[in-house]
Length: 264
Length: 257
Image (cartoon, rainbow over the protein chains, first blue to last red):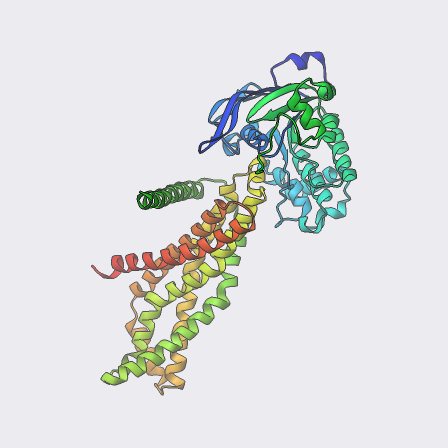
């Protein structure tokens, strides 16, 4: 798919409007508004426990928002859990923070899982597709017969990426794709995300607190703080945002308007 | 004031669990009745629950049958009623000890492993991953286990019945000096279909309870290793207690009328 001016102005791929979510009396999301255009890559940054993952899970349908509207391709999915989304769920792929590979299955079956279970593809055909997809993330076919526990963290992330893109999704979510990896492997993952997702015109929504990764894979960056988006802008302008909160986060300073809850 | 608050908290906590368990059970049964099912996974679970539990259940059954023969012989000798040993063994095994002991052993073996496996999948986001891959976690994880438990426990208990009676026979004939023919005759003549069937129905219910507790506790486990550990303990303890309670209720229903 080629990015043209016309599909930048079309209906947003993902539309998030005034989404709120609380657990007990803890308000995690306090009215989030965000639109993601087709083929755009938006990165949400923010500290730990600011509601990044919760927002992603609300869009995916793993959690249900208390109020607000979430639309995918103009279709309201706010109150439809992922299991009942049918065709909408097939548009999504997700790379989990810990890769979340099924450790009872060999690697190839992990990659082919959505094809076998969701699309009812014959196992033999699915295995071929899985090995093709593994090649895209730079893994040899022999890796397919190993179990996930035999892989290193970086390889697990790559298998997770392969699993996320195997079903040719239109939207891929990344939950801290580079966390827990060494800087070189982190950059390998960034490059793979660009090659397998951004360059293919797939819409991407990522959360991270790795600024290097955010600048590299994001077209736009949004910063979440206390359950609200306090800044949204072009990825290139994140270093001169003029927002003290963003500045503090981007430069990783302990001193600033964001106070960590530490006992002194 | 604190004391009252404590009571309130305990009651509320109990009600929350009860509500969650009811919803969980309803959803699970609903998914059992609606396709698609996963025959491959059901088969896998049946082998796990049925076949691999045979040694444990068989050992439990044979020693229970043996000790039952020995105990009832020494007890009944006081009333010169030694001839009732075969009857006592077959009735106790088929009606009570077969299903209850097999149920408790399987609860320890299978309930624990279900809770640990599903709990680990929960805390490592594998259950969330299932739903992002267009697969319903209930259908993929819970339904195969429930159906396998429901189907395999009666089979296991039937085997346990036979082995238990055989244990009684061994002790009766080789230690207590019964005539083999007489022992077998009084076993077969005395046992009625309802004795065996009631035991097998109990077994099916216990199998369902074991799988349900394993899946429920695993599915709702929180936190890391500690949460999974707690889920495993809860699965075994709650399954064992529920087995003993429902055993009493089912016995009432079958035999007290």
